[in-house]
Length: 276
Image 1 (tube, rainbow, N blue to C red):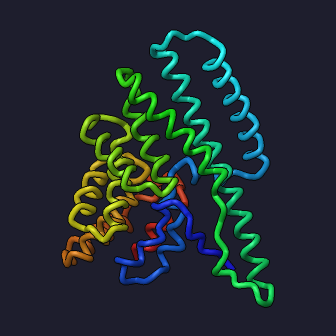
Image 2: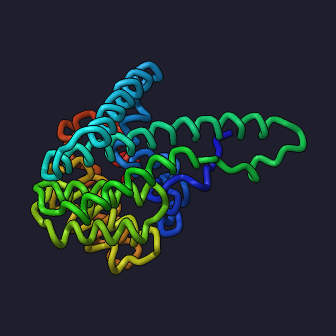
């Protein structure tokens, strides 16, 4: 049995079926497509690779913490950059722990499912440890934006702050950051992904009026890895507002997207299969 973790971060596809008339089939298959890229990458790593990455990351975290605690950087760009890299390392640690917590929950669920008298649906995953690390990353991102906002990577900080908020189910706060990003830094490399996440927020809240234009804007960036996903969700928006011809044409574009342009990405293949 596969557990449905009720504490999984928003954006995992758990609410797609609320609008899609095809039921829940695409929800289970598209779970990892809807995940943030960093979580997606870690989930595809072998245990040995994850362990190696964990060791390297924790060494880097100690190095950054030592610099910030024991050396006088005098503020400035170097200090802000060290803080940014530390916050990103904390976020990666949180995602790694999240996978471990989810795996432990699945094991407990399976054991309960096969144990007489145990009610598996009453189980809840404990993500307290991973949440702690994301909270630490969020705190640093906010300090950077408040104290040192003038450096050239502010758009990156805003995007990672929004992503961390989203991963901890603070989606109302997250969408404010993503909207701030696309409004203030329209040329940022993070804008396409931000529009997808804005679309997801409104789609999951049954607000197609705001979801549809967000996906349309995301779909302008054909070289972005999330382009096909944006088109897929755009098609569902058209369908649910009664624009059936546009829905069919957009879904056809997903199906007919050249396989060579997907780079062999499994999530793109799944999207094309779902669009058929």
